[in-house]
Image (tube, rainbow over all chains, first blue to last red; front, side, top):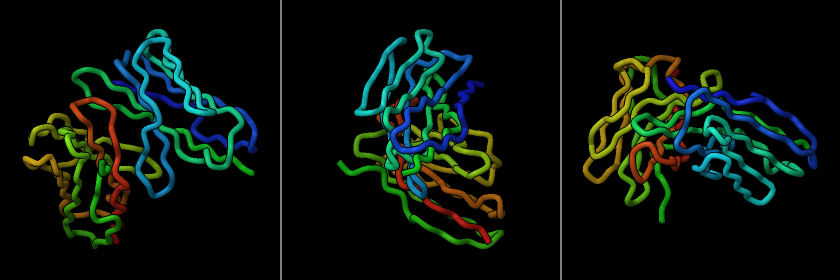
Length: 110
Length: 112
């Protein structure tokens, strides 16, 4: 069974601060996705990373896929209250279902 | 292009009843997956369908079942509802098996 562990589980910060969320596994994934979910809604896909060492930027969000394709990180610069939500990472591997991490619940206070 | 549509959005049922939830995937997507999300357990995989066949199944009892139709639309059914089945049920569609998932808004099921 593939397991994705996210840390931290909870994060409460002030507007303007930077933060990093981690997603780790002992398994290799062919690709990894990051989602953001707001209360009462479904997760929304933010980005997909495929190549080991790949870095993708989405405005103030920077996503990195580890060289060995076993881990990933999400860095948010100058967080805003609108960034509040549940951040989920999910990995895919041939022959296996999409595996989700437990999520990081982020609260950004104004 | 329309997103994933789940109906109904909200549902209240009594213990012992059964319920059917519906999901229409993004046009052209052939894979549909179902997840149960609760505050305590997070996002738990139920099953995945592709070309009307169940391809993967999570660790849920037989009371949870599903199917996919030829137009890729999917339904999931829960029989003999228990209080613990109260959750947000999410459907996700993917272009192919085991690729990135696009989620619907979910159906919030409350069992009383």
